[in-house]
Image: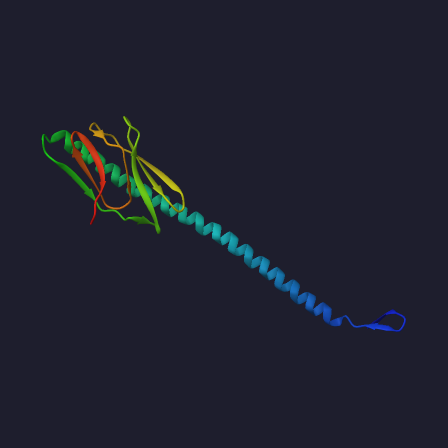
Length: 155
């Protein structure tokens, strides 16, 4: 104890224990919050990579189906061409859409909704392709009226 002013005694021994306790908790909280922030970004990056990889695989499969339907349409006269593909309706827990874009040089564009990821898959064709946008899942490619049409197939 020390004497601040004549006749006044001040006891500040317990203050240092309380201050040390509060400072220790504050530092621990900041460290844990930093770990959560860093870990959250890592998990989000891994999820985006997973979604992109799955969309790329599905896109390549759908592009191969478009090319198969195109080859069959070239060799079939007055017949019906139908190529079916089973695919998941969700990738890494999120929905996606499949679109055919590009006019004379068509391409498949697969877009996930959460996180926002877009993947493009090219395919070659001689048969005209109808521009389409459908939700992800099992599909079928049909040749109708000289055009390839991508449709959602209900299972």
